[in-house]
Image 1: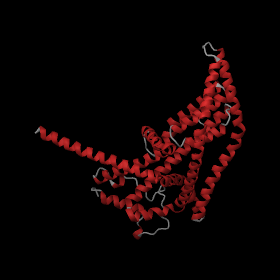
Image 2: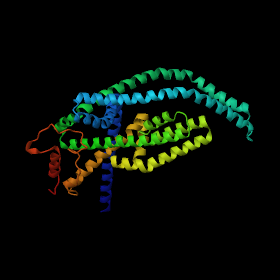
Image 3: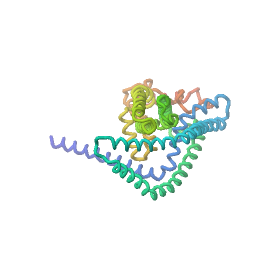
Image 4: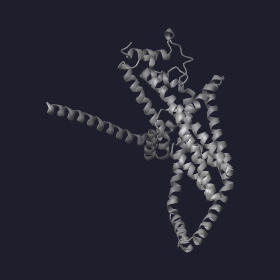
Length: 394
């Protein structure tokens, strides 16, 4: 009966529609609640990402005989000293060359006026001066807005300081006692969460390390290229390029535009075009060779997923959202892949021995060295037994 078949199809569509509406409503509710906890959640998320880089250093110090607290404090102090040293080295360069760039920008405007006067285009110099004066008046007209922004900026700066302190505080406890969190979590939730947590940690750690390697290559090569072209503030631009590279796609474009503008203002059009060529070559090599090689192993995300994630993240939460977009997408991908593996395991499509177990491996952040087990069963054995019990092939 065709009508019965069509009715069944409509019922299936109705069920799918209801499920879709419930999912969208759940996501909307989660997003609404996230606004109230975002201030406290953001430092924790940043602390987790920072800890993926610092934890191996702290673990290495503990292996050399350092107590846990001393190893964690030494690691954090080392990070702070490096950051302060970099910005302290940048400050004199910016101070000494900023006025020169301003003077060169004024000379560039005067040269532009002379070029307009000599050009065959019928534009009078007084018209150009009028346009420039309008720009200046507009900037002065925004004085009240700027003043209001400065006042709100102090509030934002205080919030940033508080968030940074909370992040450092949480980072200290993660790199000090992070390997003790998982046993407590495992006792409450089981071995699935242990394995999934280890996989997420490995993915986030791989993302940060791969992105740091890509950012360092970008910064060094672009910095050397700008230095060879005698572009002012080459060191500062290299540092900006390094930090901007942690925001995929958007960061590279922003840092490159800054470098080209400084080259144009200081050394002219030819130098700016050469600087643009250097930046394009470096970013093409990095984007087509180095980044896919490193990040595909770390995250396994397609470039389209990365681009969409950065776009959505920047739309929802600005620069912070753009930075967190790829780690969040990678975490979601890990959860989806793990569920797919478990579904294939329960259906008998794969054998338990075909699944790579992270728990108890070198990529596992949990330290099992001081833990004793009955019958010499390690945590890895526990996960293997769990998978064996789930498989119909066993």
